[in-house]
Each structure stands twice: as structure tokens, then as C-alpha cells.
Amino acid sequence: MTLPVVRTVPDLRAAIAAWRAQGLTVGMVPTMGALHEGHLSLVRLVKREADRCVASLFVNPKQFAAHEDLDKYPRDEAGDAAKLAGAGCDLLWAPATAVMYPPDFATSVTVSGVSEGLETAIRPHFFGGVATVVTKLLLQALPDVAAFGEKDYQQLLVIRKLAADLDIPVRVIAGATAREADGTAMSSRNAYLSAAERVIAGRLNGLLFAAAKAIGDGASVSPTLSALRADLAAAGFDAVEYAALCDAHTLAEITTLDQEARLLAAVRVGATRLIDNVAVRVDGM
Amino acid sequence: MTLPVVRTVPDLRAAIAAWRAQGLTVGMVPTMGALHEGHLSLVRLVKREADRCVASLFVNPKQFAAHEDLDKYPRDEAGDAAKLAGAGCDLLWAPATAVMYPPDFATSVTVSGVSEGLETAIRPHFFGGVATVVTKLLLQALPDVAAFGEKDYQQLLVIRKLAADLDIPVRVIAGATAREADGTAMSSRNAYLSAAERVIAGRLNGLLFAAAKAIGDGASVSPTLSALRADLAAAGFDAVEYAALCDAHTLAEITTLDQEARLLAAVRVGATRLIDNVAVRVDGM
Image 1 (cartoon, rainbow over the protein chains, first blue to last red):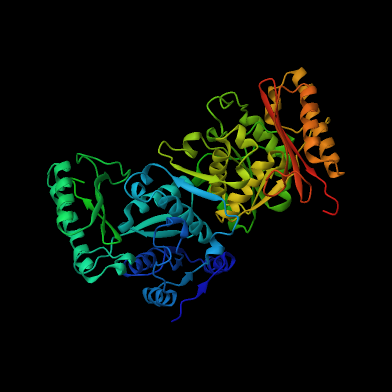
Image 2 (spheres, rainbow over the protein chains, first blue to last red; image 1 turned 120 degrees about the vertical axis):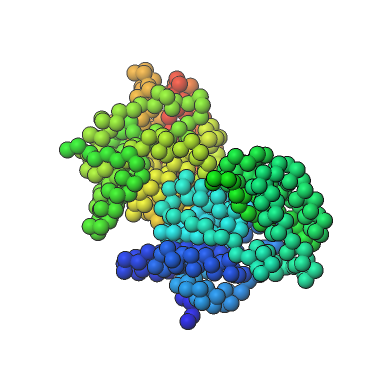
């Protein structure tokens, strides 16, 4: 089966209006392509919640800084379309950059609070770009439901916040992080890793899960995070950008475990940034 | 006839969904209340373009600075509702501040370009507040058409820009400035004027129209604007905040008339700010 592709907002809206006219519900999975099982699991999740699924494929220049990997970001629309069709996706929304951002484009959406710290400390431009493009994608398609992965946990919370604050009529749902056999979080950027770097990358999730379990079992937070950082360095990561325990909803950093919490980390191996995060189990929660 | 009022987003959406289920189109007129003929003319304009009209009444704290007139801004919901019903409005959307901005509200919409200069030079917080609240109002109601007055010309362009840039599925239409018998632009803030100030305020529109005609007839721009500022001061205005000729679409200030243009001014009389603007007629345009 070949996945239908639309490249203009009127064509996208016409396809969705045709579904609406049949009384069908619509879900959306925004992506930047380079699709892996994580994205496909979101398509399957959406298809359990809605009758039809539209996936977007747009490598958003506004969320890359000048020195980042926009130009080398992996692109394979035909391969992505085949994967999406296989997962049950019904439509691919693949606009050109000039469609999303005409030359006189002048509007931006920003979210404070959950967008502060963590990724923003390293990539200050990032969530402004994400918030603006996701607002556009949601308003172009006006889906009933849209799915985002927990892998990008801070991004998930930023998107939940902007959708609620701007009254975008969509239900944002989260998909669990898809992982390789060794537990490594799937990421389009894993393709950048050499074989040796991939071995190092494989240590991140185990160290994170172990630290989360220790904290959940009652270990003190600060010493556990210090040990985690040391263990990551010892495992061969070239930098630990952050390793933080945060309130699972506000992302405020916390030093004692008396609320639902998330352990988040960002590391570098060679030239590649990797992020991952895990829930911290709290007794009785 | 009593105008139906809704105070929550679900109630608003239920009322609009009931219209949609009957195949009716929907228009919107956002207001801050203190309604005058300018607002009512927008309701009548909307009713020519759509089957039903919802007017919002929300005095938006985000577009007032701390020193401005939020607390004394005139409020009379019952009187406003009666006026709206008389003009053919079908529904009043009057949310409390806590409905629009819950305590953890964290998102803002900003527009560069058209929002720069003019009002922003005097009220730097203003268009951020306007852009955020109008985005919310449009997404709460998702009308087919929404009407804004040319009286707030820069605001009209900011709203056109954000609606286009964020792909809000609405057609933004403009209503001509409603004027008193002496030509004064109607404004809720005219209620602040003493009798003596009202006489001075009445001079603004005539001087603006005369300067616009002179420029349209070929007078040099800079000397004409200088003379306008001097005439406004001589007429008794306490300050001329700006008097500028601008491209009618980008609002870039211009010094020669070779494109569609708008003459805009802001003045103060006593403690009250007044703004007005007029089209400049260009031969052959």
C-alpha cells in the first residue's frame, strides 16, 4: 500500500474534512522523519484512540541552532512513508519549509515553566521552535488526539502545556519510550553513533534505571545523582550535560522524593547528544 | 430578548457545536466590553458573513501594564449584553479571568514585524497580551470568521499575522472605524474625557484626515507630519506620542508615498490616550 501524501494545508484539510464527513475521528503523530519503532508505536497508539492517523514529516529548522545538525539530519521520505503505512498510518503530511514558514513568518509561541532548565540550559532555542511548529501542526490538522513520545519528556510536557494554555482542542497522549534489546532509547540520532560509541550509549539506560530504583527505594537524592554522573563518565560518555530528579509534572528539580518524579539525563558520546528519562517509583503512588 | 451567556470553554463549544450540527456558520467579535457603535457595527458585519455571531467580553489583564487602567476600565456586562442582542448577536462568551488564565498559565504568543514600533514603543507589553488572548479566543470558539475594527489598526494587522502564521482556520475581517458626529473615533476610553477634553479630542480626526489628504495630493511626507504634530499640540493635546505614515500592510514607516499607506497617530489629552488612523489615498490604488 502506498501512503497518500499531502503537501499543502488546503489539501491536508480537505483529506481530514472527508474523514470528518464520514463521522471518523482523527489522530496525529508529528515527526521529523528518520522513523524508528518509537514513532511507529505512536501511530499504533493513535490508531487505538482514533479512526484515522495522519503523521507529519517536517524537519523543523526553528528547533535547530546554527551549529546543530539540521543539514545532516537523516532524511528518507519514501522509507518513512513505507514504515508509516505498515504501522496503519492513513496519511502523510509532508510540507516544504516554505509552506510552514513563508518569508514573512513572524509569530512564535513560547512556554515558560516546564520549558526552563534541562534541555533549555543546553539548547536555549529549542522549545520555542518546538512550541511554534507543534502549534501550527495541531492547528493545521485539528486532530482529536495527538501522540508524543515520553523519550522527549520535557518536550511532552511543553506540548501538553501549550495545548492546554492556548485552548487547542486536542487530547495529547504519551507513548512509552521504545527501546532496543539492550534498553537503549530509540532515537533518530542513534544513527550517528560509531560501533564503539553505540556500546557506550547502551550503558545510559541501565545506569538511569538503577539510579531511579535506588532513589525509589529510599536512597538520598543528591549522592545518588552524583554517583550516577560519575558512573556515566566512567562508562565512557564524553560529557554529562545534566542528570536531574524532577517533579514529573512541573519539572522543577527536587532533592527529596515526596511527589511523582522523573529522572532525566542528557549525555554526549563523541559528537552525538543522547537523552533519556525514567519514572521514579514512589511508594503508594 | 435576553442574550444567552456562557462562562466555560465546554459550554461555549457545546453551543457552537449545536450550531455546527445544524450546518450553520459562526462568526466572532472579541471585545473588552464597554461597548459602543464600533463594536455593534462589527456584530452586524459578522452577521452578514456568518449565520451566528458570538461576542466575547473579557477585559484582558495581560494587555495592561501595572500603571495602566485595568482596574478602572469600564465594566457593564448587562448593558453590553443588551446592546449586543439588539445588534443581532446570538451568544455572549464572558469567561472569568481564572478561566482564561489558570494560576499555572505559562504560554505566550508573540508577533514580530507589524507589532514593532507605534503602539509598542509606548506600550511594550501590549501586543504580547493581545496576541495571546486573541489566539485563545479564536481557538476556544473556532469561528469561520472574526471581525476586528480598523480603529486599532496595528492590532488588526497583528491579529491577521498571527492567524495566518499559526494556521488558525479563521477568516479575519476588518470593520471601518465608527465615528461620532464630529468624526471622533469611538473608543471605550472616550468615557474618561471631561467635557473640555472631549472638545480637544474632537480635533484629532480632522487634523489626521487633512494631513492624509495633503500627502495623498502630493505634499512631502516629513514636513506634513511635522505640521500635523504642531497642529495637534496647538489644538490642546498634551502629548503627541506618534504621528507616522506607514506601509498599510507591513507598518514599516515610509517617507515617500509609493505604496498603499496608512497615517496613524496616538495622542494624550489629560490622562487619556487616544489613537486614530486613516487610509492615505494613492493615485491609481
